[in-house]
Picture 1 (cartoon, helix red, strand yellow):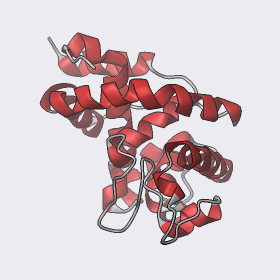
Picture 2 (cartoon, one colour):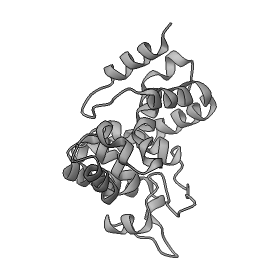
Picture 3 (cartoon, rainbow, N blue to C red):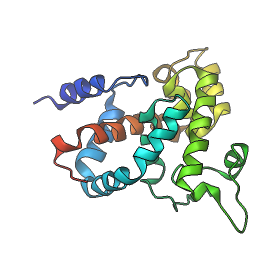
Length: 199
């Protein structure tokens, strides 16, 4: 079986509000989440049953595509206490300043970035703002990773193109694979059963 055409057809069927794409990078992330990392994907699916109903409700409240909650798989594997080497914290991996912009308190007593409810509310508003700037979900999702300024620079370097796939090579290295990783994580959430993964 040509797995590329199978994966591509499945990804195509996942297209809703967020227009996805298929590429070798996407295939790599599908393989990673659905085949190579079955154990951690199974743990993620278990946590998803706990967190995602609440998160999807918040995204609905802001009229945002609820499949965006799958970004938390790449960000933190749904671990609300995750802290990155750069200091990004919580299930949505907010940096201090971005969190503060969206009303998340972080001081020696409290860190709202670790509160899945408050952090999800902030993430929904942040993604809504990024979509308002770029009008393309691939770019908004990329900006969630590297900041709007870096995406603007990539658009300028590309000669003013305005979709993720057209400006991908102009984005910072680690961001070039962020949207493909999201598509791989989303794929796993949709098709885990056919890969024999159980929550």
